[in-house]
Length: 424
Ligand SMILES: Cc1ncc(COP(=O)(O)O)c(C=O)c1O
Image (cartoon, rainbow, N blue to C red; front, side):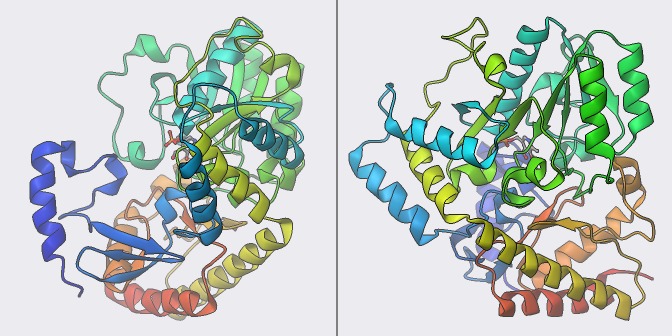
C-alpha cells in the first residue's frame, strides 16, 4: 500500500484551519485524504510521490486531462496580457459564439464563475421571466451549493439528510420529482400552477450516472410547453461529457435555458447560463433581471475555454467515447468473472459503478445499491493506484488523454479490488 505519511501530517494541520480539513466536503474520506502535488495528462501524483490513474478528473472539468499543453499555452498567453479588466473583451464574444455554434439553443449566454452561480442566476431569470416562483428539481439532482436547490441533492450532499441553515422558507416552493418518471412530472405540473422552471440534469451525474429513458426528456419538453413552464437543462457535467453538443444534442431535445460549467473552463473557474434570446434579453443591462460579478467573463478562464471549445472536436469526442465503452466492457467482464452483480451506466465520457443487480433508473435505485461495498472497492482502487471518487454518489470520467495502458491498469486494479473488497 502506498505510504500516506505526508498526507496524514498535512491533514492534521488542515483540520485546525479548514473545516473538516478540506475546501469542499466531497474531497474528504477517512482516515484522511491524499494530498495531491501535481497532475499531468491522465495521472496525478500525491505528496508522497504515489502515481494514480485519475478517473475523478476534479469531479468533471478535466476532459482534456491535467495541464493539457493547448490549455496551458492559452492561459500563459493571456496571463502575459492581463487577467482582468472590468471591461468587455473580444474573448467573451468569441466564446459566446462558439457556444451558440455548439449548442444552438444557447442563442445568448452570460458568463459567471461557478456552476452554482449559474444555477442561482438561471433560477432568478426564470422567475423574472415567468413571474412564477416555484421550481421543480429532480430527487438527487445537484446544481451547486445554493439554498433553493439544496433539497434532496446529490453529490456530497447525498450523504446528509439536509443542510443546516437551509430553512423551509428558503426552499419554498421547490418541488421534487423522481428521475425518469413522466407520470410524476405530469401530475405535478397539472397540480401546481406556481412552477416557472423545471430544472434537470439531462443525464444525472450527481447520484452517479443515470441515463434518461428514451422518451423521458422529450416528454418533459412537451409537458413544460403545455404548462408554460421553462425547461432548464443543467449541463454543467453533460455539456461536454455526454458528447459534442451535450445531452441536448445527443437526445435532440431543446431546452429553454442551459447551464454549463466544469469542462468549459478547462480547469479554470468558469460557468455560463444561456438560452433563448427573448429570455436572456431580460438580464441586466438589457433587461430587469439583475445579475453581476467582478470575475464574470474572466479573461484567463475564457482564454482556456476558447482553447477547450476549439480542441474538443466531434472526432475527439467520439474517440473518448469509444475509450469509455471499451473500459466499461472490460470492467463489466471483471465483475462478471467474480459473479458480482454490477450496473455500469455510461454515456460519452461519464460512467458509474453501481453494485446492484437491478437497472438504475432513479436516485431511489442508487440508494438501494450496495454503497458501503462501493466505498470499500473505491478505497482498494486507491491503494491500487486508481483515483476514483470515494463517495458512491459521483460519476467517474475518462479524459481524451487516457491511454489503452491506463485503461488496462484500471481493469487490473478492479480485478484485485473486487476480490478484496466485495463480499458476494
Ligand atoms: C450538474 C451540476 N450542476 C452544478 C454544479 C455546481 O457547480 P460548481 O461546483 O461549479 O458550483 C455541479 C457541481 O458538481 C454539478 O455537477
